Image 1 (tube, rainbow over the protein chains, first blue to last red):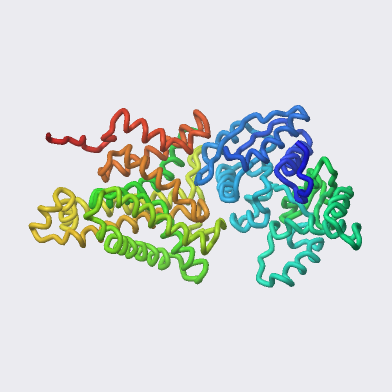
Image 2 (tube, chains in turn cyan, red):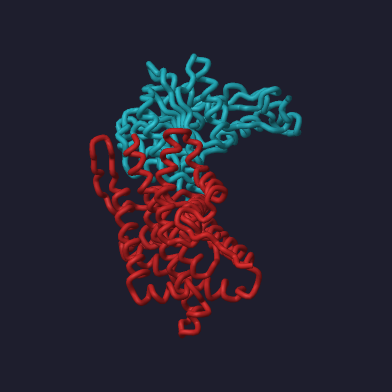
Amino acid sequence: MPPTPNVFHGVPAGPAYGYTMGKFVMSKPGTKNVVMVEHSNDWAKSYADPTRDYMKTKGIEPSMVLAMERGQTDATAQVLKIREAKPDFIVASLYEAETVIFLKDMKKYGITDIPVMGAAGTDLENTLARIGDIDTVKNYYVPHAFIDTVDGPGMKEWNDMILKYYPGETITGFSYVSIGSAVAVVQALKNAGPDLTREKFIAEMDKIKNFDTGIFATNITWAADDRHGVKESAVAGFVDGKPTVMKSWNEPM
Amino acid sequence: MLMQLTVSGLAQGAIYALIALSLTVVFRATTVVNFGHGDFVLGGAFGVYVLVVMLGLPFLPSAIAAIILMFACGILISRGFIDPIKAGPHIGFAMMSISLGYIFRGTTRSIWGREVLPMPRVFDIPPVFIGDVVITGDAMIISGIVALLLVGFFIVFYKTSIGKVIQAVYQSERGATLIGINVRRFHDMMWGAGLAMGAVAGILIAPISLLHPDLGAGFLIRGFAAMTLGGFGSLGGAVAGGLILGVTEQYAGAYINTALIDITSYIVIILVLVVRPSGLFGKRAVVRV
C-alpha cells in the first residue's frame, strides 16, 4: 500500500527497534541460544517479531518463548525455566513494571551473567532508579534512539532547550522523541525557501536523505514510497556502571 | 525446581490468601461481593507511598496510618454508599462497589498518571539458601506477617467475645438484633476490617511489584479465585484457596506453559464451579421449597 502523501514518520517505530534488538543480540560473539520473554499483546509483538525476523536471517530461532503478562508480580516460573535453558542472551519485550520484576527475580535466583535485551518501552536510567541496584541491571540493554544518554554531553544542548521552555521537566529518554523529526522538518522548510506551498514542502521532505539530525543515533531518510524515516537505533547499557550508548556489543558510539 | 516453585508460590499465595480473606470478611458479614476490592488493596500501598516517599515519614507509622485510613474508608463506604441502597436490588451493591473501585483508580491515575512508582524497600533481609532453594527476605516477611495476621484474626474470631458476636451476626442478623447487637455498626466494622486487611496485602506486595493504579485488577480476580476454591464464605477456605492458587500458578507456569500463569485463576474458578461449586471448605447451599 502506498504511503499517505502527507504523513512522514520521523522516529524509530517497533520494526526499527525490533531490528536493532535482534542486531544487538546477534552482535555478541557466540550467541546461539536465545530465550524470549514477552507479553502476549501487540505492543510486545511489535518488538519481538522484528527481533525474531532479524535473528532468523542469522539462522537463529529462539530456544524458548515464555509469556509474562501485565500485572504479574512474580517471575519465578519464567526465571527457573531460563536457568535450566542456559541461554546466551534473553530478549525481554516487557513493560517497565514487569521488566523490574523480571530482572529482580533473575538476580534473586542467581542469574546475573546473562545479558537481557529489553524493549523500547523501558528507559535504562528509570529501570535502575526503580530497582535501585546497579548489580541487577548491569547486563540489561535497551534500544536507544539518541546519540548519548540523558546525562551525557551529547544531550546537553537538547536538555538546555527543553529546560528553557519547561523548567520543571524531569528529562528522560522519552523527552526527546519528536526533536529529531522536528530538525528534519526545519531543514525541509529551509530547503523549500520562500513562497512555501504544500506540494513544495512535501517534495522537500521526500528529498531528506541520510540526514543527521544531531540527536538521533541514526540518520533520517524519506522517500515518496517510504515514509519510515528511521530504520534502526542504537542500544544503551551500563558499561562499568555508567549508562553508555552503543552501536553493537562492546562497541560504544 | 519443585521446591523453589512451592516456596515462591506460598509467598504469592499468602498475599492472595489475605485478599481472599478480606473479601470473605465483607461477604460473610454483608453478603456484598466487593468488586472494587482490588483497587482498595492498592489504597494502603498508595497511602504508604504518599506518607513515606512524598512526606518523608518513617515506614512503620506510615503503614499503620494507611491501614487505619483504609479502615475508616471502609466504614465510610458502608455507611455512606452501601447502607443507603440496602433496600434496593442486590445488583446495586455490585454496581456500587465497582464504581467506587473505579473512582479510586481514576483518582490515583489523575494524580500519578500511569507512572510506575518504586516503593522503598523497608526490610532488607538477606535470602536464606537451603540447598538449591532460595527463600528471599521478601518471601519471609510476607509469609511471616500474613501468618501472624491470620493467627491473630482466627484467635479473635474463634476465641474472644468479639468473635462470638461476629459469629452470631454471621449466623443470623435478625437474631443478633434481638439480643441487642447493633448490626449496622457491625457492618461498618466488617467493611473497615475488610479494607484494612486488603491494605496490608497492598503494602506488602507494592515494594516487590512496584506501584501503579492498574495493579489491583489482577489481585481482585486472584482473590475471587481463592474464595471460590476455598468455598464462598469460608474464612479458612479463603486462606487455603489463596495458598493453593499461588502454588498452582507456579506449577502451571513452570511445568505446562508460562502463559497459564495469568489464566490459572480463571481456570480454577471455572473448574471449581463446575466440579464442586461449594469449593473445598464451603457448605452446600440447601434451599427448602
